[in-house]
Image (cartoon, rainbow, N blue to C red; front, side, top):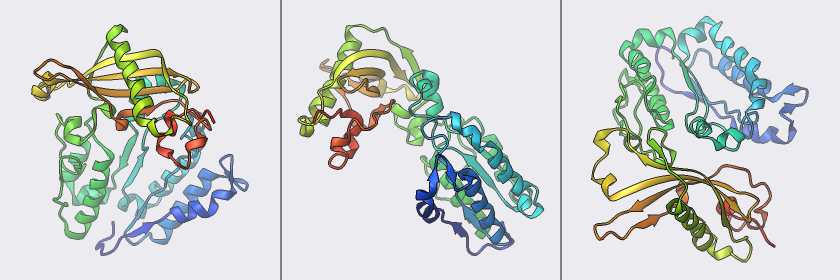
Length: 338
């Protein structure tokens, strides 16, 4: 946050990642922990542009993408990196730092539980606000604090970064906020819903979940879901992939909004269900899906499935290699038979 920012220097780490990829083995690069190399790179960049405006993103997924146990090996390097900024008075006064994750574990054993689902869909976010920002923009600083424990999305973080640049250049926030991306420097409504934020029900953790008994109705919905995979998604590659069958329903919920103002006519004509099921013939595939049940005035119910609202929550490995090149987006559903 220099006195007069006219340009922002951006750290582009992608070329570094590509050039070093072949040298990384078991999270080590030569004789160093890759996290050490990663953060050293960030420190060097910051030091080089210490007295200019800069924006940098360091993305480190190697340690926690598939399993969380290895994340502990980043702790000391991350601490050292944060102390690098905090112990230097220039950085401490001028640098805003966001520490965040993009999502929680997607394939762990815990992911099969409701708690695991919440962890996956509620990534970590922490923000360090420098004193200079608090002095210049007291209202924005207070709004940032006020927005704790509210519904936020990565779109909001993007809007916040744009706001930060705009504030430093003009002294004013970017006024192009929309409902889907709200700056954290503005006060976000406490009753903001997933619908307001553009979050589909399948990924919304704010909905009321009423557990359903496993009965003929839930079994019918699960079987229709499997039929959707076999007859629609895998239709053109049925000669390559095994035909799936329902093996077990692990969980079934009715999804409802907790906010009365959102329990409108839409909830009267439609219902949304969330299922977790296990399938046969594809090495025990575990799927979560959200389905909409339409209830029109004539009383003929209809189930609507959408590929966007299906999640495979266990690894399929090389089981779908036969369609890797031809139909990569369908690998999670396919168990190769050729």
